[in-house]
Amino acid sequence: MDGGPIIGELNEMCSREEAREREMTRQLDKFEWKKGTDPKNPEVDLRRATKKYQRSSADKAYTSQQTRSLDACWKTMEYLITEILDFDCKPKAGYAIQAVPFIEVYSYLRDRTRAIRVDLHLQQPRSTTQRVFVETHECCLRFEMLSLFLLLGRGQKQAEQATEKYDTKLGLKAISQTIEPLLNAYQAIHERQLAKSILAEAMGGLLDDDQEDSDYTSPFEMAARRYIVLLLMSFSPDAVSGHLAKMSRELLMHPLVSFATEVYAAFHTEDYARFLRMYREADFLTSVCMSGVADLARLRALWLLVRSYPQAIGDKISLTKLKNILAFASDDHAKAFLAFHGLQIVIDKDAQGGANIILPKKGTPEAQSLTLLQGRLPEKCEFPKGADSLLVAKFDALGLSRAEIAFGSADPVVRRGMRPWEAVDNASIVHLPYRYVPLTT
Image (tube, rainbow, N blue to C red; front, side):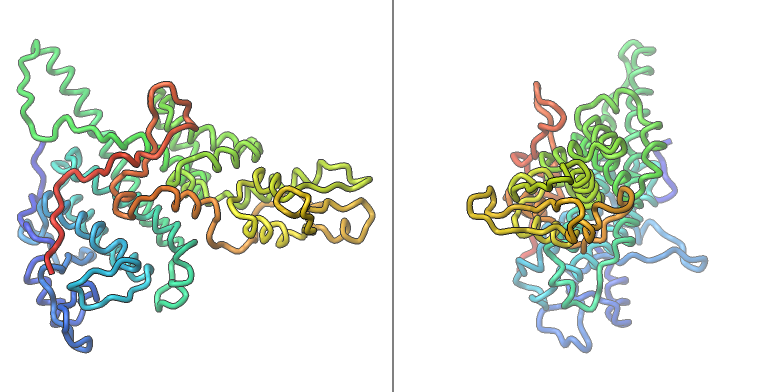
């Protein structure tokens, strides 16, 4: 049962044959060019070439010689995350290019990480329960989540200067292509361990337990399951109930997962104040997962607030108080959101935050023109997508490199005595399962 149709034999990040073929057909990426080469006719740097994703076709069969071994897959993953992920802000010596926007970094990594996953999938079922398979898919999930933040927020200006544009649908598709095999791997590992325990008990403890990686359990599984529930809530809400129904009671009761179910319950019971409080208090990656519906929750919370004040006499609320309620981290972000939805902001040095938000008196022209006082609970938020000040503040507060985030150092952990929403970033652990040796220049 451990045997698969293919066992990878390629021990490099890319075969010489593929690298030379792509050199001849001009399909090399800029990150694979030899330093000093002619951009019109680039030569390949074999040390930096990584296998390109290729669709299967009827006239092309996969072979063991062209499939990377499990160790080579992880070696490629570590290279991409450590050397390339932050290339837009930290260019490396020895490369043919230096100035690259993040959208081009993302495009390259999305293709190459997909190629890694293909090589791992070709070696199933042997590879499914291996540590490399699980950790590669976990890294891919974090990479896509981090990119969602960088491209919709901080990377927006760079993206506008690039020839490529970020397609949110393609990003979410890449996430879904990562989630399914990762969940299957978790399930296969648990089933295998259960079968082994039953067999060991039946044999009176005489079962040979020397199989490599057979007992590996990811320490990041619960964090990943938490991310998945919240990503589904934000971007595929119809799938949440079905996903939760497949989870065992033990999984649902875990503090990291129960936090996600509480967030989901808060949003769908219209308890937007609680949702935004959890959004404000959550760790960085958890907040990224929730960000897909954060603006809608803010708008609905604001809609409910506007409907509850004494309209006969009017009212006002300080900027600081409303900023806290709506989970903004900066005054400018809060002002832009409130002004976009028609609320008047009046400068007042004595008010908290230096300004008051005016809630108009009924019958005044301001009240009649305020759309929040008209219609039903908003179905969507039209506020332009951009950097969320709360996410930016959380990212800056981490003090971690992008590679450390991708390898799991920002994943939430729950220590004894903590409540689910008090989970902290796993920033004290830099997770490098295999020793990575940077390329020499």
